[in-house]
Length: 632
Image (cartoon, rainbow, N blue to C red; front, side, top):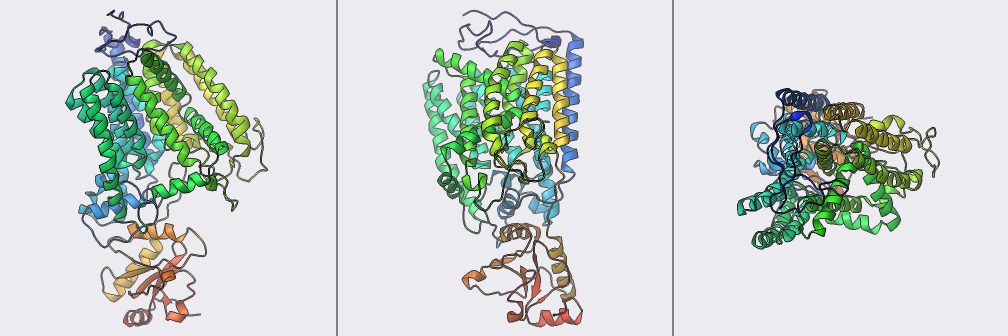
């Protein structure tokens, strides 16, 4: 076994032994990779250490400030499904029963478990939501630690690893989640912990480290069903690990399958506790597959890959190339290792995301409505993009390879050309991007999105209404060019990448409207105050579609959470169910109001709904106090 020669880190940083990636095209890739291939520690200068620590501290502080700044707009949920369902599940986990069911296909409960304890201390939905936002952001900032530990495994020092990890966490694909109470932040943390656990098991195989890997993957899967891609990758990688230790490999693969068979049904059962129609992700997938085509699938594959390159300004391309070339080398030696895991994870996550979003009824809806975010959806892959970007920066700090950056740019050009000339001409760039951080990685370029529709197909040029695609592609190529020029000035490179990440996030941060049902809450509180009753019974008329505003599913999910501690009872009048409460939430212009003798409480509507009072003592008392609208 030959020993690699010492290679000083940039800035003279002191570094403990750490594996070095073997990338074909460099002098190192031909070296035999046996059990514990490490680079000897190199003694650096105190000044070099201090400068890198200064950059690391500055990057962490900048990342913290960025998340705090973006989170200032998080006054209420932006999405009634991705945020509303976990918050309602958290109430159930915290011990509340008789909750208002919510609509949608449901979400795995890992995130709900994390925020459930907040409901023990307050029943104020606003307070719980704010706490959930900051719990998520603290977990996002905590993710810097495992990412830095991963970077260490690629041969950089601790301050270098912390610096590049904080920088990557500032890109829009990560930072724009800061004003949501979504499962994405803990999911990213568990992805990073899983990747770190893979490194640790590879470095020193043991049952404890294998269990840690399985536990991290299980945590990710319990948080979100799409982490099935991660769990599947871990299972296959454990099988590959049999070449090193067949007992651990077989046990780990069997454990991953067991997690899938046990944790999956358990998570679905917990999710269904507050769902109106039951868990239904499989139904959504099947519906999408029925409206899919190979043509659409190819376009979604190209656009999502292009979006990841744009979101991290080319770093994902460099990271993907490093992982791919190193995997080829590992497989050539019949020794699938770390890079094989990363390539498998990237491919499985990419495949899951593209299959999920190849939905013709969203991409090309028959009613003429358009969702731009469905074409440039980045949220399902932004965590993979972040990990690849950390690998890219760590490798470039270690190897200073402008050649690798140039090769990445050359590979990106044909991919981007297919996007610009085949995908982009028919994409509705003017369409909606209002989803929950669905398209974070492109929002820095929102100034180039046209406000009015144009006739498609329209091939992008630098001056027409579809110019976004071309300008964004040029931005990626320019970014890669700057990376190549600064790769031998590592501190300058990291600082510039950090400035770019911070700037694009600040530009991308959208001014998003929040829709808490304050008007209906105020109406109910006025009734309770007038009658002297607390937590009055409420019925929600699910059979009455609102005339304007969001649909009834949005209204239901919003009032289910925000009416806490009240729990409105869902009445499906389309199924001839009857009202049992004095107060009814129904359409602003309720057709059955006159028939039932109902009168509206004074106040403005929310979501096209308002509070109505059925005949009886409560209605009489409110009428005497002038709290009911005058009948027309």
